[in-house]
Amino acid sequence: MKYAEIKELTTEEIKARIAEEKSNLTKAKFSQAVSALENPLKIKALRKDIARLNTELTQRNNAASNQ
Image 1: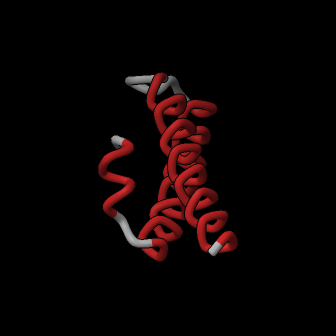
Image 2 (image 1 turned 45 degrees about the vertical axis):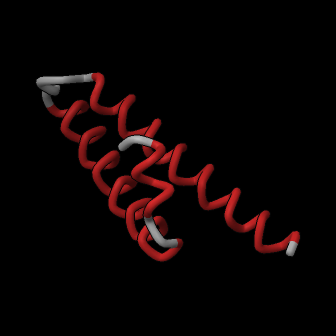
């Protein structure tokens, strides 16, 4: 997910997306443990997406606190 796409989401959508991505990450980790994933870099991409979403959420919370 690109940063520009994340900026277009509402705060509630970001929270929902974080929960969804964490679930996907957990499933990918279990799949990797059982048998090799077709694309092992998927785990890295999921972690980065979660980090981007959390960063945007933190920035919005800080901006709301400062106003």
